[in-house]
Image 1: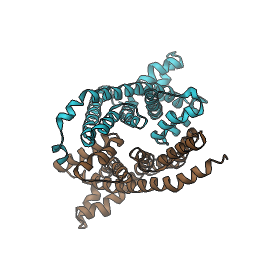
Image 2: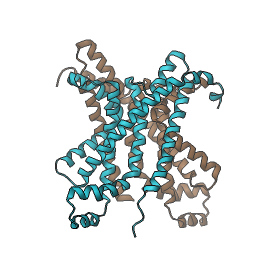
Image 3: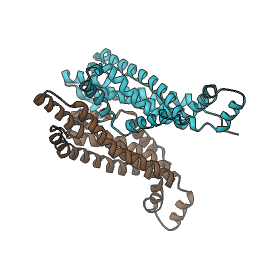
Length: 226
Length: 219
């Protein structure tokens, strides 16, 4: 606690607008990443669950490669590696940031949705087909609504991880929350103040998300099967 | 193979791999020890202890790992506690890893039937002996799959140490890229980062497969 006692709180208060800008960047990148991870998860998760040839195998490779390699190396490969391969693949830090977390979240989410869609009882789909629904219609009206609710808890954990992973963009100099705090510390030597403050901000965001999520989860939870 | 490859690989294996292994070993052993103890204590119905361990778990699971590492490396020196980069990274990973293990341990310990506790007590074991010799050995079966996953996660996250200046594998790769850029004008950054990815994949993929296999076999 002696750390906190020695803090110059007025200094922290003076930095509020800069830190707020950083937080907005963090949330922006997270929002794009989460939206993309959702789309990738549904599309590739469906391909995996329904064993669509070629797409399913490619998706499996994508999932394993992303899940079994450090995200920091993925970020560096995107940001420093690709431009060396071809100058057309040179991305801004902002683009790299959302792209990296989207690719990462998409892989984890593919697995979440594969499990979710796979857990939808086969008889539901059978019933839908028997009623004359096309396979595509069956997916959108039966498998998707039920499967996404099964996949909800695990996919939401993935989205929270996406948000936390945006902190790594400090390594490529993208001015999100962590990077802004480090930059302020670099010119003012207030390392401790800055890092403790953003830690509190991250916990506030992550905890309130988890609480909100538990609420939504309860509302959307599937009723127990009779 | 092009001639630039060999010195780079040698440098990364000699310098970087050693540091990566050092961070990984401390992190895994530390996470397992701290996590199992905290997770077992979490099953005691005594709310002050429980809420303290809960807080520990929620804080270190809620923070991005890099922020935890920054806290140790940049904030602790203001109270006079200083760690070298690799140790700061390892401690950060222990805080994160032990929170994961504690949660898994709680579940595993609670899955052991009450009769086991009662039988051990009847044989004269105290709380510590009961858990150390009777409950935890049985809970270990259930704990093995998450431990193997943790090992894979810790190994991948050792790369974060490069951000605070530890010269582990990723950092030595980046140094090699800068050196090649200066000496030959071609950084080979794509090949080097892709190579690092491949190396991590080669270690992590068997581990995650093993975790899935154990999950099916043991639980």
